[in-house]
Image 1 (tube, rainbow, N blue to C red):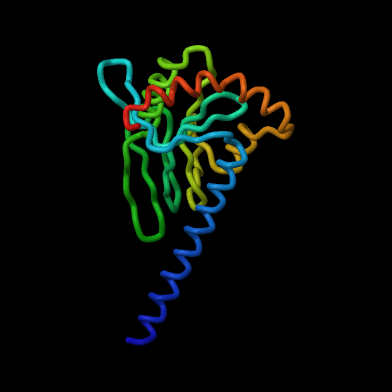
Image 2: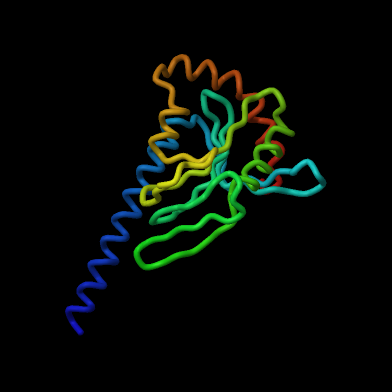
Length: 177
C-alpha cells in the first residue's frame, strides 16, 4: 500500500509542476504579445444576445481572441469535422469543433470595432499533438509568439496607441463590468 501511495504522490507532484510550468509559459507569452488584456469579457453578440470571450488581448497587430484548450495526447480535428477527438494512452474523448464558436466571438468583436484587425486563435497548450494536420485558427504557444510578437517595441507602441480608442470601445461594451 505504501508504494502505491508514493507513486500516486509522485504523480500528483509531477502534474502540478507540469501545469505550473505550462501556466507560467502561457503567462509569459501572453505578456510578450499583449499590451493589455481582458479576461472573461461579456459583450453583445450583435443578435440581441451576449457572448463570452475568455481572453481578449490588445496586440500590435490588432485585437486577438484566445480560446485555450488543454488536451494531452493526439488531437484529431479538421475544419470540416463536427467533433474533434483526443486520444491519449489511457483515455479517448470528443468535443465539439471549437472553430464555430470562435468565429462567433470574432464577429461580435468586429461588430464593436469595425476598423481594427480582429483575429482569433484556439490555443492548445503543451501536450497536444496534431498528427494529421493542424486546423485553421489553431496555434500553440510558439506559433502564437511568432505570429503576434513584435521585435521592435517602439514600433509596437505606435501601433498599439493607434488601436487604443477601439480597445476603449470594447471596455465600454463589456456587460460584466
